[in-house]
Image (cartoon, rainbow, N blue to C red):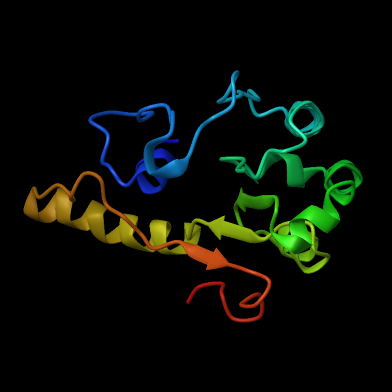
Length: 162
């Protein structure tokens, strides 16, 4: 949440989850956001459907987890209702994570972007951090960032891991 809010507002927040967007950078969050799914994939799809139905002029929807896409048939049913708006970019739908099922949904025109973590890189760096902690008594930077995969329909074939 903080990363999204900070990026859209153009201002670094003092602490998580960042400052609610009330016009900063031209962005305003609708009432009731953020929504919490409690990692319930079906709830995430229902929330997406409810928000988009209640706010037909909403121009951006950004799930901070890939949860609605983890039930692809349900997500497809909801997102397909808005496919023309997604294609025209009058509804920008960008979803966290870049798992194969999600990339297929983007390929079908049901999202304009996917932003994914790099778990292999996280694990790889962790092994070196453990050695540094044990042998050199040196802690890693906190936080330590790995890059993100930023995928769009135009970069779908080359965006993962690069």
